[in-house]
Figure 1 (tube, rainbow over the protein chains, first blue to last red):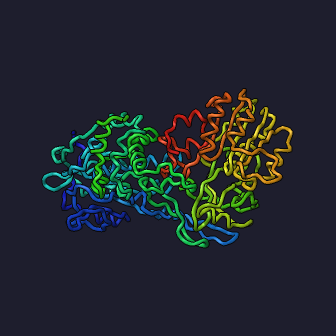
Figure 2: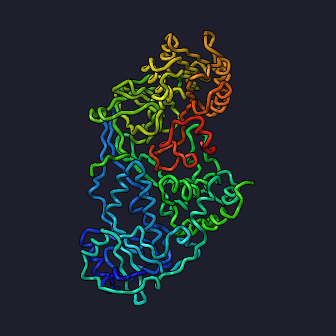
Figure 3: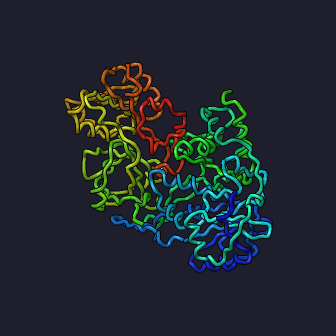
Length: 343
Length: 279
């Protein structure tokens, strides 16, 4: 890949860059080492605990644009008068998401497509607009990773405003991808140097396990296929897969508080839960776990590309790592392509 | 940013409460904000999210006709948390409403046709909207037939309106109750809706059928309509699935790749035949 547009960001310049970002009012999320694990956390300064060689965190940064629990508005109500107080959208945080991998950066695309589909979700769109994504190429991967099977690569910059690739010296090759990225660069120009280097040699090689378009075609007419039941026999419907997924958008709307004062909230939900589609009458269109597993796979790999022109899986592997009964999504997707649709 | 907040409900004052049947009420709702009232419009078949502060939201079709200006009505049965809270509300109190959402009955395309409405139980409310809409444009249509049944005489909703339709010379109304649901002075039919429909045998010629009822009624009604010669493209129904948002984001109501909230709730029988069994 041509690299003449790359800048060099030396490791020793990182503290100054983080200080500048913090001073300009940004909230920085970065992958921070915590014992054996690395999870995203808010940082105000650069530190050596920030890990740029992690494979994957348990949680993505989806919650910064689509919070686990989002207060939509406060209400006050008595018998004949009710008032609604919306949040101050201008006070939503200006986030810099530092060091997330290409799968996570790409995951903002399907979120955006869902929250824009005919009706604009002001909460998500405001948060997204105020977010700068600093992606980080992967130097390592594990067996759960399958980004290359879903048309993403360990170095792809799709979804990132700035893309970092760590070189052997521990410095970063920096690619300015969008205007938002340019703004960060302009703010701290003096910290960046010139370079001509090849980023590909620092990037891990994630093997391709299946072909995405082939899978998509294969799912046509699969609604009654026997594999849904076979694959989900051990599913306990815990919803962990959805709660770690960077692209899952299913949510619930609830009221918290009393009749006279409280809030309406939007909170994460999961298509894996039995009550998710339960009617008041007791009828449930997705009564069994296999029907709910089918919904999960078809939604991401068939319905989303058909309706909003984007796939719902980034190959991050989180659902498979988190599953308490070891349901491995890529293994199941491969089986779907291999096994017959009709009994 | 000035774009509207899709989650924010209109505040509606309960203008009138009508007790329709045991546990079934109709609310007439008026906008508390005149600007909202002026901007609001909807079409027959659309639905909304009705909310009680502290309890949450619930989904029903708008039960009044768009030809009746200045208010909307909803009819609901007290069953869950939100509907129970709604049932406790009195005239003058405020509730929330978001909408309208979903597609509509293609009333304009029905000009010059006979209309046959078939409803069961608590499914008359979503159809009442389109019935009144068409009655207010009565000259556009030919024969006007309504077949409506409920479990018992007491469970029939809109009793005052049933009487009004019965007395109109330009409407043929057939009411029925399930066997055992009749009272000594019941003058209507006794039997299930599909059976009564088959006996009445309305002509399929130049006729649109609009069907709404519990799944079991729908299941037995469609084949009878086909037997009577109705084309599946001339049979309409409105579907329900659990919903939260009403605009294709919360992930509940889809039947395969079809979203009831966006692509429906109004479907032809022909379209239903293409859907997987997920409703």
